[in-house]
Image (cartoon, rainbow, N blue to C red; front, side, top):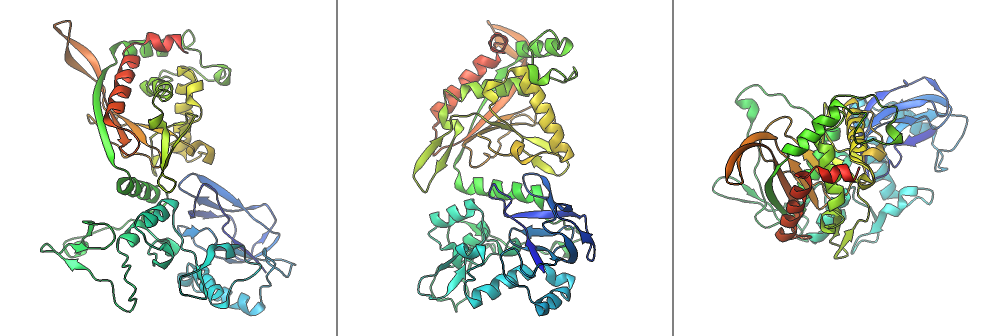
Length: 465
């Protein structure tokens, strides 16, 4: 019997949602045949079948969140050993095949608990995740947690391996850390204190409070929707960024009247202006081929070279700032499944028209769910544009571990004063949110001043594309 566990998907990904099985129990399968489709917070991927044989048991159901290392499928082969060289007994096979559907999601957790009780297996590749806890001679399982949560645990002086995780598969969350009682008396239940408004105060972070939800169902009909895939990743990243990063927002308005004229001229005659380069020669001309976002990303990618603090990441463990000498600009894309941030690699090396094509291609792939992992990772700075939908100024959350994000509001005509006269101009509201640990307000003000100068003078783009 060959036991196949969900492999490491890279980029720190610890789980994926099972979208579709391409096989059923009892099916004959061949190595490299499509096994199932998984969706992570990065992209949808097809997992190939690892062996030739017969499907003995499927370890998860469509819609389940599967953890890395969790049993995905068991395949009967002519071999007597599994992937790690450990024999799978017939008795164990029978017990697995009799699992009820409601117990299947627990099997990997039970397996891990059994292995901890029995001691480390020399063939077990996950043995490196075990360590000795203080005052305990036996091995314990290393907690499952995202890197940001581990970092938060260190900042809160909490041994994360002592925290019981309430997330999927026992994952430790930021909420678990906030509610963890570090007192050595484990026989006592963690104490909570109720305020006059029944808010439960939890230990760990001063003034961090959690209030239990009321029984909404007692007040009227409700509908519950599981938080999965992109929505779960968005929730985790925004909570992490909000807790760890001291956000500062600097707002301004940019006169893009002349820039809009240039953009419209290009879209009316795309073959005569701003060549997109040989990579895009086969692209058809479209009226929306060049958007305002392309000009903004072009300007930002150039400005970041003069303002490295906004193209950096902070490493609190090493007490250092990591300045990135490459400029991969992400932009927020609205998709049916939630927010996705495609990344334009080396944006500073592309002309404005090429950026326009890249934006369109990456946004389309994101909407259709065909993005590849490479196009959704590695960003150094992000831009989000909600102006096309509505609203004025926007104050976005930094895309952690980046240190800055630029938000674009709705461009509209406004009366402004020019040369002591009131004139109508196209004004674009912009907001730069940045990490105050890395940069100060004066740097943000200068960045925005230079951004205004570039966007208000379209000759800059004509000369550099």
